Image (cartoon, rainbow, N blue to C red):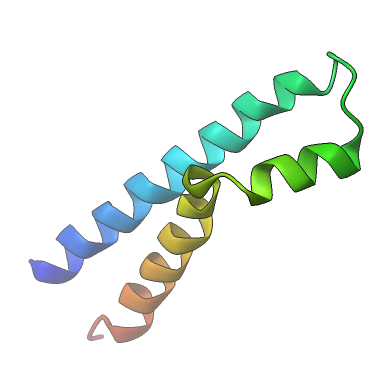
Length: 66
């Protein structure tokens, strides 16, 4: 039961981070270049939720007993 709960936390973080990164893509039509976009999202903590969530999910899938 604990593995499922931790996996769902990781999934929620990954979804939150992915949606945030996609939402920030709305700055591209406003005149930002791709380089400026990546510099901007690298400074936003909520964009790191995608990486943290993926890492948590990978850990749980690796540790889940067969």
